[in-house]
Amino acid sequence: MPPERIYRTHAVVLRRHNIGEADRVLTLFTPTHGKVRAVAKGVRRLKSRLAGHVELFSRVDVLLAHGRSLDIVTQAEVRDPFLSLRDDLWKAAYASYVAELVDRFAEERHEGPESRVLFDVLVGALGFFDRLGMSPPPAADAPVVAVAPPAVADPAAAAGPVARLAARAVELKVLGALGYAPELHACVRCAVRLQPGENAISAGAGGVLCPGCARGDGSARPISVNAIKAMRLLRTEPFGVAGRLDLPERDMRDIEHALRAHLAVTLERSLRTTDVLDRLRAMLPRDHDDP
Ligand SMILES: [Zn+2]
Image (cartoon, rainbow, N blue to C red; front, side, top):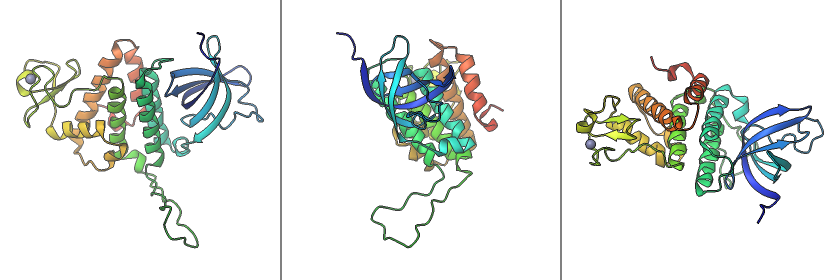
């Protein structure tokens, strides 16, 4: 049976670039079809019905028509614009990083259940960075006052440790959604349950190593029990957990290094790794780099 010509789906706009006089090619991530590339025709014209509904990083509902190489956006309605991701440079950098990770790891037209999980990770991450530094809105049943206090924004929030940890959570959750997460509970070589001690982590091996196995792995790097525990929480808990962890700089760096290495090994199988990681690294602030 031929595929339906028209289909409706939720989507997040991961990338977009202009083509022709007034068109744009969008890279969308959808929970039902994985990554989809689609043309928004005439979207750069002032009177376009699509204009404003397919902005970068926004969550949208779209009606798509199957095309020969690219699909065609026939309708779009923005559901969550995640406005501050485009207004704040730090947030924009993190949103770009999230979109890039999903873009690189996601397959085109993949209808497996991973796409749904990955979509939820993507929306959760963008929503978290969008709201980062904003005071929570008043509860719906809060007493009505003459003038509601405005949301207080902390402009430094997205440059701080919470955003840094949330980015690690994104990495762990994206890897986890696709079955590539590092092993964080038992030694990847001998399967013994990890005990507090001189444990290590190795991207090549795929996760943590007990002290005995670590000695035989030249690429393994020591990692503290607290860093391992933090990674477990970032992997499984909602993004808000990033705001409740207080880690010393050393553990932050060890986690960053371990995940960067793990991403590189995972991507290496099919992608132009160095190119991708160099670009990702260039997007992150300087103190994320190795000394
Ligand atoms: Zn072991």
